[in-house]
Image 1 (tube, one colour):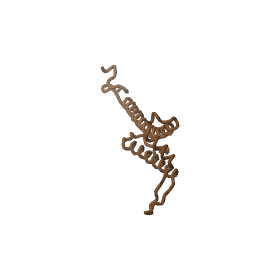
Image 2 (cartoon, helix red, strand yellow):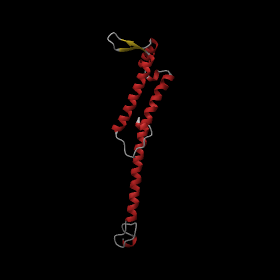
Image 3 (tube, helix red, strand yellow):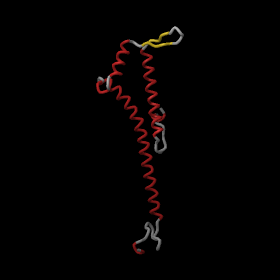
Length: 140
């Protein structure tokens, strides 16, 4: 996942589309990881038509059906922790986007402050040329 591998980003605001793509990338990685796990837990079956099927154990099937039919609040603590681990991965992605947004925001503020200071140095009284004022006290 490029965004989580420490890639350096310019401090530019992120679009919703970028965040959606990063989360979708994670969702696919999580799903494909689960599928690899699932297929490693079962047995391959050679179907009569030459295709390869898959059979899982009755214990695995019963456990996963139970988990699927149980609301999160009612899961045992160990199973909740597995879901929390997945949530932490998603949070990492979201925080990286939030940090990038915040850096872009602070970068914009810093730029505005620098511009304001520069303008302050460039301002001179319209009448006598005194620096750092629009109209000096003597010319009012």
